[in-house]
Image (tube, rainbow, N blue to C red):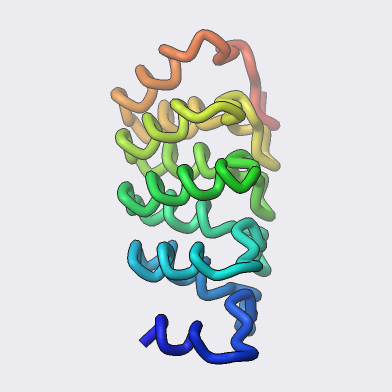
Length: 159
């Protein structure tokens, strides 16, 4: 169905809905790998368009724990020069989402990419490490601590 629509002249794959989400964003959120592959074949697909919450397709895939989609997006997005650390309206990066949800494999994927900063703070001064620790995700905490660049002395807005 998507393939047929994309083949029509004048179809804009970056058209946004009322929440400013594109087809790529929805495909990432719902875990539809094949749709994502079809979209990246299209010329002119903007892979880092933000919605009204400033979330990107990568942010949605990570937040929903779609590991295979995250792998695909990281491969395609980084190849296209997209920043894997783009923040949403709350200052959350994709790594923040993965750490807060306890998605170990997704955290591994993100930490393996150049340009992912595990110390970026959200709007409340929270880091991915602080979210994982608060939620009790011991393996995620270990993964984050294994990155030598993690600063253990960072404080959130509550101290």
